[in-house]
Image (cartoon, rainbow, N blue to C red; front, side, top):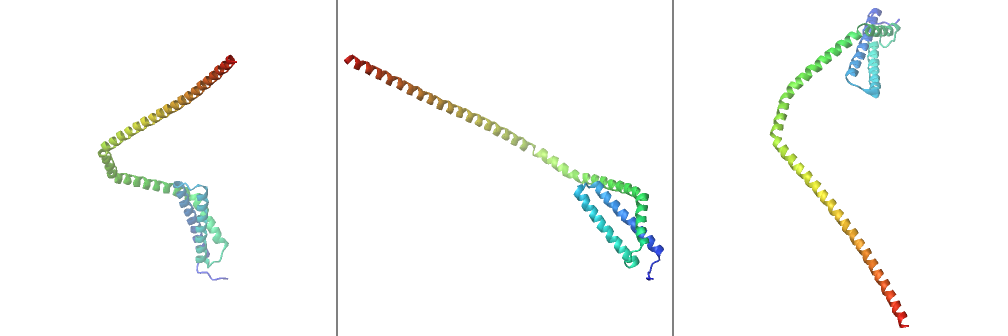
Amino acid sequence: MDYLPYSQEYMLAVSVMGGMLLGFIWDIYRLFRHYIKLGSVGTAMGDIVYWIVSIYISVNLIFDLSYGNVRLFILLGFLLGALLYFYGISRYILKASIFVVDTILKVLKKILNLLLIPVRFLINLLKVILRPIKLKCEIVKNKAKKRYKFFKFRLKKVSKNRKMLYNKKKQAKRFNKRKRGQKLERKSKNHRTKEKNKQ
């Protein structure tokens, strides 16, 4: 029989408290997830971290209690502690923790708002001081927009006029070509008639 410095009752009580501690750590993790949405990947990573921490605590506790000898009543103690915690005080601790964290966040928000009052005052003062400059900038901006629109309109008009002139020139060229053709035809007809008359 191995010599152990602790009695079985003590080891059972400590393992029960260890199970309750693991349950409390799980509630802390749940509280963290309540305020920060981790998503599916983040939740999976969080679960893995929790189980690593739980195994580390459990192994260290078993080594301290029984020099690494895994005994059934120690494992049952962990299970019993977790069940006592989750079905006993877990909901109350979680509600109390949420209430405390909400209160702390509200107080911090109020303190932050109080600290930001001078900053807001300075920002409003700067807005009042810079208002004439802002108005001038808006006037300049509006003038620039109007000039740009007018310039665009003029460009469109010029391009239309150029197209019209180009089309007129084309039409004039076609008309001149037709006239020349008609004159040549008339000349050739007159020439033919003269030749007939001579004969």
